[in-house]
Length: 243
Image (cartoon, rainbow, N blue to C red):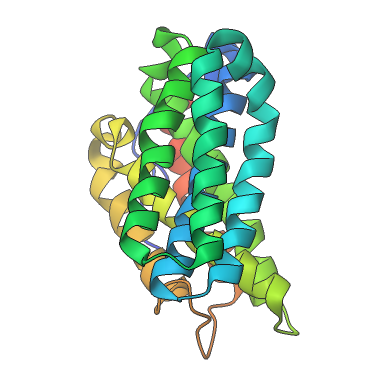
């Protein structure tokens, strides 16, 4: 899965100032938490819609809610109405899953929570200057990929069981979120490395998750996933100062 990336291969790309030095740690932590939450919600959709496993879906939803609990106090201070809407959405989705409602309305409601309501969280907790800085997005991608590496390793570690299955589902959710981040504002500032990074991410997904969130018969060794992530992270560090 390794590809030659421009700045790694010796192209003159100066190291950028780290996003944390420009914006501080708080906005980066908020972005990282929101992406973890979104990855869990993506895993919940996959479990409910693709795998038809309400138990796993509800477990992923509970994990997403634990992430949201870290953000909730700040959200309540800034926008009490938004905080109530988020709580109500989690309760409604969990109730629908428990009742076994058809997949489509459940998927739509989760997507509303992930997209519209979490965008509201970012709007309330992160200043515009940081929200619109592609380096912050790059740092979030870097952090998401690091979490993906650890989660994938846990998901394929024997013996297979419910914990490993949930971790692999989450890892696939992180993979999908990494793709979204890489194709956003980050891609516009990757320069000559854009195609190589996007191709490496696509090959990483195809290799590590050949059948999506379902465990592969012969999983890719975690070391190869780590190598691909290190190659991408090297570009993000050079171009954006992501660390």
